[in-house]
Image (tube, rainbow, N blue to C red):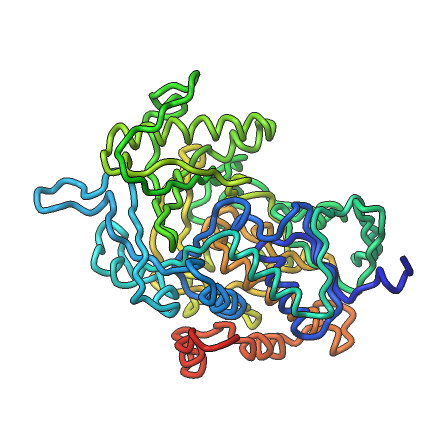
Length: 491
């Protein structure tokens, strides 16, 4: 293969939500893109990890809406859920209506616009009416999601996708990445590189500084941070799927798996989200704490998570008769990971940004909006639970720039976030918007002939993103509101 054939304007490493957003944005702007994914298929957590639900929240416009519109064209591919029952809501006698957790079902009358708000509730428990009115997410079939994403990328003649391929080494000089050596024996050179891997593996390979676990309060002056640093991280989930059946029964518990919970005082609460075909996505909150996940070897982790989900499902069927009308039919190929190693950037998003909201932020480079609370799963973190936000906040573009690098961006959960901010700024649509901003920023930099990110005109970047229907203001501008209301029109 010639050197020219291996030279791109941007190489994107990782095809989860961030990588998909980056490749689609750059490709739509005409850049020559190479998208690498070490797994055999695209999609990351959203497809392989069973996290095939976009939670409610602002900032889910742009490329996520494009994907949603394509999914709507396929039978039983996507829907919008509402909260039907929740363990925090009592019935007339004061007892919980659904002690197992949350039961979320599809309501065909809801629209995409209904999914674009979370902020404003005092809490889920205290504001049942608000939650029922505003909290609506987007469950989709993982296979359909992969099909849509693959089709959208294939429609772009300047985008090359390689699955089952990772980088084995990287060449860097003076804060600029020059080339990647790939696992298929080839080399890829580019003007710009976007790391969209879970833990910023490319950034780590070229020496970028990292963040991991809980930073001490003194690091970023965060009121909710611990006094001393800890290695604690957010929990992980092995998501499984259940399907309706006509006759009630309890699925047999495999030999060697206890019926009682052996890793905690009790089985965790669970989120049940209905798929368009009537099956349910079952997400233990969580299956394993992040500390155990990070210290055990992958095979042991997988088997232990499988044992826990089987015991949990047996408990659900034995305790709540409604689940005897369902049977477990599949489990996700990979674990759903909420927190990983993060890369220290030119700006670190912290608890101060999350709590300040847009009204308290003065950043000129905001590239997406978020209103998910700081939300931690697993007792090992020492701060389980969440506090709802009063208003959305913005993520600065500088959070995507690894400190000291000139042609490298990070667009994933590995972006420059404190541990507290990462517990908020981690959802799939947000990651896709980080990717969309990264891919667009490369286009702006190439068009202007820039040599460093310091020279980037944030007004030009934001204008480009708004032209791509990315929400950068709250409330929604009239023209974006009209665009989102036309969800049944072609893309």
